Image (cartoon, helix red, strand yellow):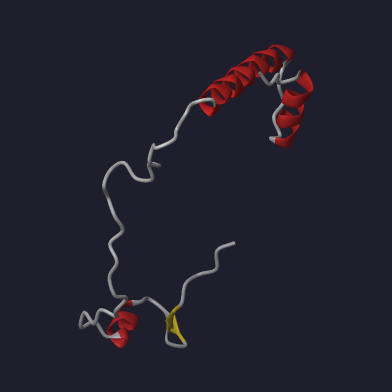
Length: 96
């Protein structure tokens, strides 16, 4: 079984920009060791003949043609609704 060292936990905390107390390091070390141990158990399973599961809900992508929808609205009509316009565009105040 792979043992997670205290230095490993501190290194991961540094990479994650986490500040951990000593008791948190010890608890996280134990938790990570348990997780790695569980994964090692799963790696020992015989999965020959088991089909991979990619999708469990039965949903599939729906594809459609990318077409322009002419809803009858004209650009000039929409620009006329804007409080201010400039160069055939709606003028909005700067936001910084």
